[in-house]
Length: 220
Image 1 (tube, rainbow, N blue to C red):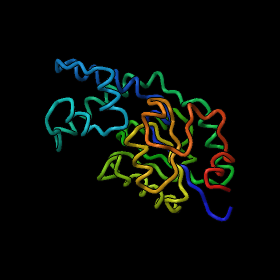
Image 2: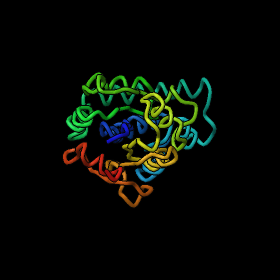
Image 3: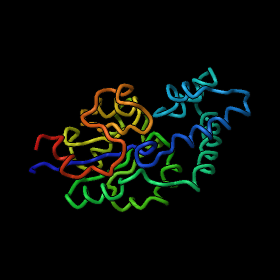
Image 4: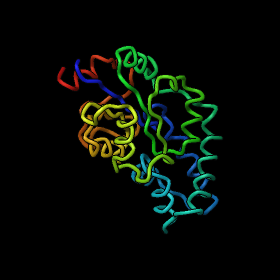
């Protein structure tokens, strides 16, 4: 191959199956405020969304500035406390990343989650040394579905957007990858194929993935 390839992973639902634990944390957070969102509301308004959107939606007013930071810290601290004993990568992702790295693919992580969450997962899942770009919510001004986090990742990795593959599990995340002009693999950990925009490939986990399958997305 003449051109370099980069693969950029979202975190929640892509590296680790965190969404059930985010749901637990949000339920605890909302319960003390006498709110009880349904499972359907969580699927529609939580997975893949920024905390600014989630909090504003469920609290039914704009949450921003210092209040956003305070409420976000409260909820995300709950999440980290709940999730830490259960951190485990989605099946096959670490060997898959090793295969990509061995074949010269540049790797990055681009999440809408706070950096503290990403740091927690990177402290338990041994992939940090493989990553040439690590971006969290604090590193961008516009959140998914805006493509900023993926376009910034491609700059960090020194690869043009059309040579990047994004792994995403949410509607807003897939849309962000498509908006960035990248190929997108839909990880079906939170949604069905029908619930996501059209992707180049769909996977349940990484057990059957390889560099060759990623290279094939470019017609090589």
